[in-house]
Length: 121
Image (cartoon, rainbow, N blue to C red; front, side, top):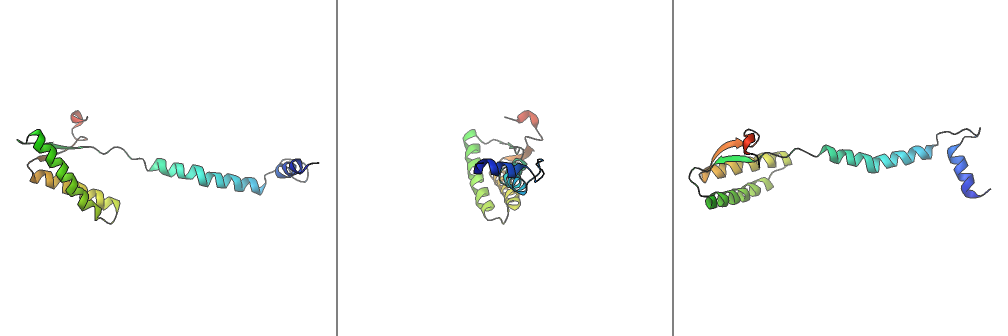
């Protein structure tokens, strides 16, 4: 009897000759689930819905002025969010600074595209 056939017979059968569950098989299944299946389920759980865009009333700002204000406020909001201790605080800070900055530049905050579904892109 060759070594391979001897090992395969002992791996899947008990001393009585009937198939049984071997601890190595349990270890292999556990290792597979921990290394492949578990991380994939964690990543799938982190997939969040798309955040709604902000809606502003430009109030006399030209398209160029509005675009420039948006870019400047995005930069200011990023600088403020970088200093946050965690991602939740960073998101809150970014949103608050962006809205306040846009309002300081002359655009009035109306809400989000979630509140105005007809304005979605």
